[in-house]
Image 1 (cartoon, helix red, strand yellow):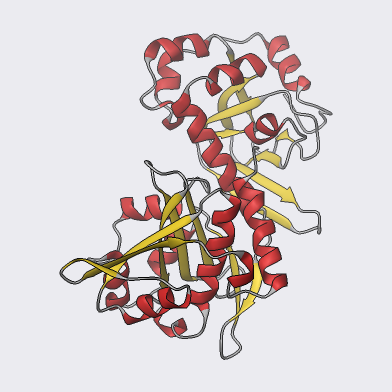
Image 2 (cartoon, helix red, strand yellow):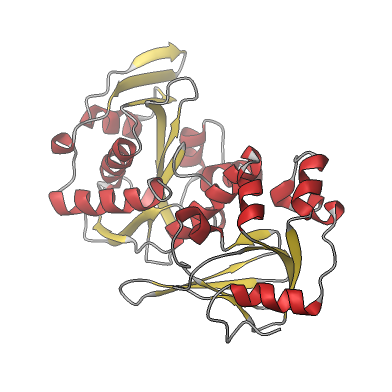
Length: 347
C-alpha cells in the first residue's frame, strides 16, 4: 500500500481493511519499550484495538498539516520526521524502532505537526481514537507518550542567539535527548568542573539519560551550544520537588573556556523565566562550599547560603520577578515564548 497519495489518515485504514489484517498479539506489544511494566490484561485489551502496519522504504505514513485520525507504533525499521517551521526552516530527525508517531496531533486535537516517512521497511501497528484513549488511560504509557511528544516539539523550536562576554555568539534552547551524546563527547568540561557540578565526577550513561531526556514540566533544562548544531557548552536545570510543587532544585554547569563570561547569569535568568511559566515560585540549590563560581552566581540573585554539612552549602529563595532578572526585555521575551511552547504544549 502507498500512503504518498493519501489526503488523510483514513486511507491507511481503508488499505488495511482491503488487505485483510491479522490479529495483533499481546506478546508483540509486551516486547515494546513503550509498554514495559504494563499489566498483561491491559495489553490484551489494547491488542484488540490495533491493526498491523507495514510500509516500504520511502512511503509516507503521515503528512504535516493533514487531519489526524490515527497514530502508529513502530515495531521495526526507522522513520524520518520532517517538520517545516513557520519561518520555512526544515527540521529532520530520525526515530528508531519502539516509537509512537502521530500522537502529537491527537493530543493537541490539531493537524499533523510533521511528515513521517519510512526510511526502511517498517512494521508496526496502527490505532485510532478508541485505541488512543485506551493508551491514555494507562498512566505509565501516557506519561511516556507525552514526554516523548514534548521532546519532539522542542526539536522544532528555533534556538535563541545570545552573546558571551568577549563577543562569542552562542545559542540557547531547551535540551534535546541527543544532547546527552554531545555532552559526553565534547571534552569542554574539565574533571574539576564535573566534580564540582556532579559532586563526584562525570555522570554515567544512565545518569546522562536522566539529565538530558526530560519532560520539561517537572524537569526542565536549558542548554547553551557553540553553534546551532555545535557542542553543549553549558546547561541549567530545575527539578520540581515532589512534596512541594511550587519549589524546585536548580543546578548548572558551564564549560571551562566559557566560565566568567556571563553565561551562568544568563542561565539563571532563563531558568527563572521558565519556572514562572511552569508555576514554580521558589528555587533551592546545593553545592560545595569551595565552589566560588556557584556561590558568586547565587549572590547575584541574593542567595543566602547555609552550611548543611561539612563542605556543603545550601540556599533557598523566591524566584526573582521579571524586573529583577539579569536579562534585557527582548531576550526575556524570547525565552518566555520558547518556554511556553514546551511547558504549555498540551494545556
